[in-house]
Amino acid sequence: MNRKRIDKKRFDEQFRRLFAQKEDPGVVYGQFDMEYLPLDAKPYFIIQLLLSFREISHITYRVVFWENNDRMISFMESNLSDRQYSLTTFYKGRESPGIIYIEDKRVDDIFLAEILKNHFNYEMGKEPTLQMRLQICIDPPPFVILMDVYDDRGFHIYYFPSNSGELHSLAS
Image 1 (cartoon, rainbow, N blue to C red):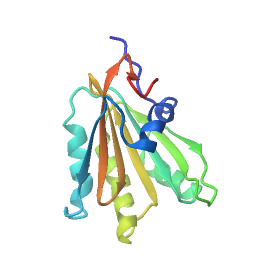
Image 2: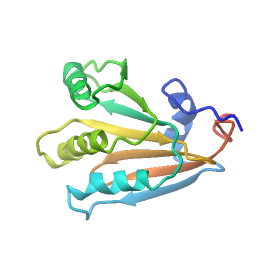
Image 3: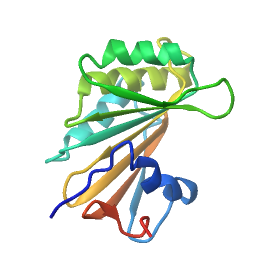
Image 4: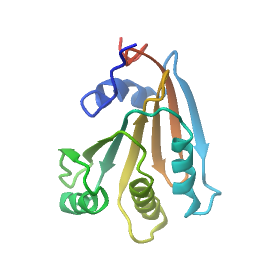
């Protein structure tokens, strides 16, 4: 089966409707409540969950941020080593966030721990901090899985059956 991956070009088109209504036929949805985990255990929990999926051939991170663009660029360059990122939407100091995509072939636990720590610290008023939201898309066959880490309290997770990379009901 030739599966198209959900990359930065297809991310928004595939998930826009889902983010708006939070449900769709054929989609398995769950919510993880991490409110009672210690702050430093939260990134570890998410990383271990992602690493538990076998056969991941592609991962797309979508970082939605309300921070100075230069600060986000500096964070990415400091934490991504040799991998590329794409700043597709600049933050202009309003309600509309900036957006960065990162594509990889594996879960980078060091990068993920750092970005999640900054994300969770924002909610707790601790440093270092970034005002952002992290969405992660992975593709272990026969699913596409989206994780939407909304804040330090938890995340939503969606499982989609994949058929040549199209999300059945969302693609219509």
